[in-house]
Image (cartoon, rainbow, N blue to C red):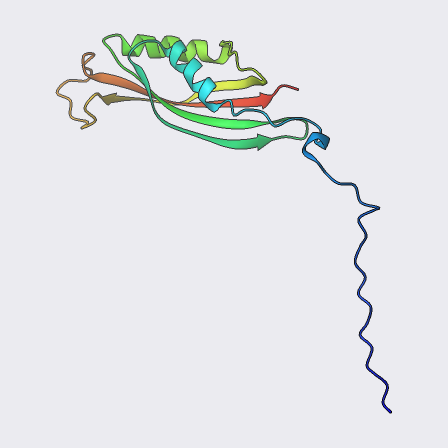
Length: 146
């Protein structure tokens, strides 16, 4: 009689030696995204006749900090748009943001350009304060406050 072929024994790791990871075992709770709160405070700092036309946010991390890098396209319009944009650009790096659970580590203007309110780019003279708008591209770095 032939001997029955024996399948090799498959070892399954036991669960007694492993610890279960539960939500309460994480080192800290997840934080709310500060993106919308930062944009709201930027609009308040920019004043009336300002609007956000584009935003983006991506995670950011260093060896010791977790956070996010935010990019915002901001339009400042009105008859005194140039002066308000200059004041905004000067005040932005030192502005105090109040975002619970987060700190604004850096805020700066990356790009500054003049555009028309209609967006067609046609101008008869060099500058028309009634229709010109200042477009600013801003970068904001937020880090989580432990």
